[in-house]
Length: 90
Image (cartoon, rainbow, N blue to C red):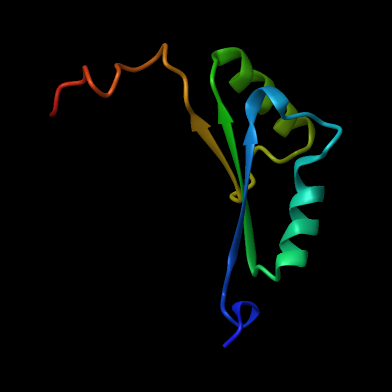
């Protein structure tokens, strides 16, 4: 069985500060998904500040993608949660 015969997933990682309208988030993802033969694709957008988060959300709204289930936002901020080494177990 070749790799293309199995169900596959293409994951595209994007950094919030580099995320923009010019590359419309779906266009390249669709191209790479098709080229890899992946059945599904998701886009993961990682942001490191409140400003980046707000910017990404605004762009997604303008593109009418704010409710798209294939886009996942990852909060990598350090100012809104304790360090893992300092956090106490519940």
